[in-house]
Length: 91
Image 1 (spheres, helix red, strand yellow):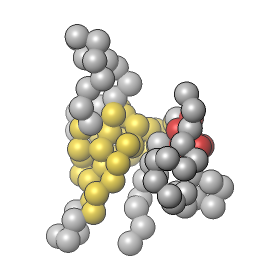
Image 2: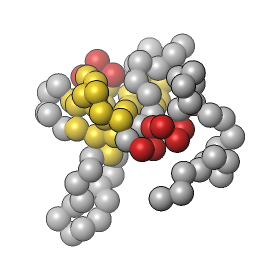
Image 3: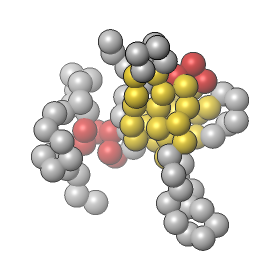
Image 4: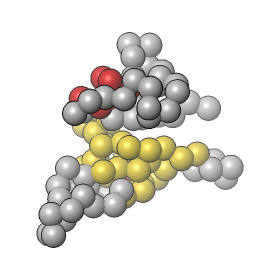
């Protein structure tokens, strides 16, 4: 099975309006696919918030991509393998 959205894409939840970067994807044996979105806003205490996990059916593309996206996904559209240590972006 292929995922509908790529890592690093910016998506919008059609129900809540939450926008975030796809940081992770999970496929379940029941057929559901969820995406972990990280918002670009810090919490009130200045910390990075937890990812919000959303069902694929609630999400739509915004057309935005992050620099992370171009470092992880080559022009073939397939993620690079090897884990975070190899080809890790330096920020």
